[in-house]
Length: 403
Image 1: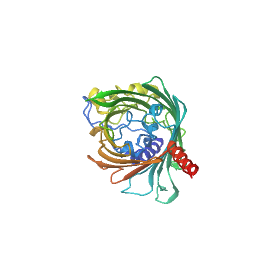
Image 2: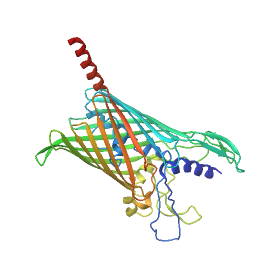
Image 3: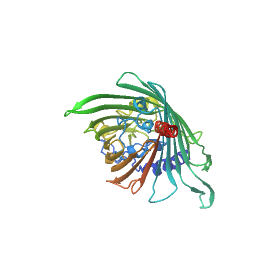
Image 4: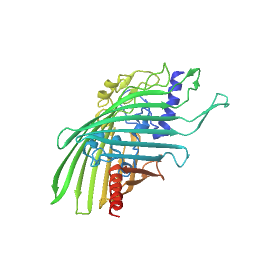
């Protein structure tokens, strides 16, 4: 009974969000054979790239230059941002080809409090549209709008001229059933707390006699408690994740610059083992029913297929960004996930426009291997630079004074 409820909740939370359909199937006792074994977690909306800049660069961004949306990729980057204050809002339609009321909203901002210290925060809201609940006879028993959100704050600080670090805290809320009873068991919203630990390094150098900047970023995110939707059901892992990346930005000339970047991502949650069919006896892999801290360390060596399968659990992101006069940007990227680990493969393109007061970014995704919830969808992000507002205000006052 509880197992059925748990599976139903995961279908809502996982199936709608990421189209993860792989399950580990045991076919024989003996040597492990490669098969679909997708890692699944609760609240996967935390892993969706929420902004259009990163969304246009294959979801890469842990080492990209700092911007208002650094909270998702690497909040340590805020310590190197040029402005003192900024805000951004992003909108992402989800499964647009099937339904028009599922979307992700993302609001983020930062404020410099000292020359070497910045505080930031964000709100991520995922609406799953309207769902009608029915009983075993097909009779309607209620309507509900499932939703999830996460609120986080971060503190970022320069540790040296070239290195910064950050700590973030996050509260996660997931309400997928509205308290409905499933086979006599009442569900409830899931709650969890987590933290991020990140670093960012950048250094000026010269490439082919051109000024350049090399950057490295690392972010261990969503390190926290498990989540449950009933009092008695087993708790599920949230998507703890390790992201590492490098970026090289070259100043081609006074007006043109080009950045290329590469990210690797790995979920820090246990992989499902291989069982003897119809039993709970594990013949390959490790027991996934462990504490959060144990699961993080175990995630590096618990794949039933050994080292070969562990490597396939690493997702790759490639991105490039071209700027003209620091006002107009073109972006492109590619995201790769192994066939047996979700099979998400897609190209992305994007563009950006930056003015004195605000900036506007767009991105578009082109799937390669299978349908994607974001295909044929235009995503956008609106950025506000409060330093630009101050400059505009000063210019206006100067004109008034001169008149």
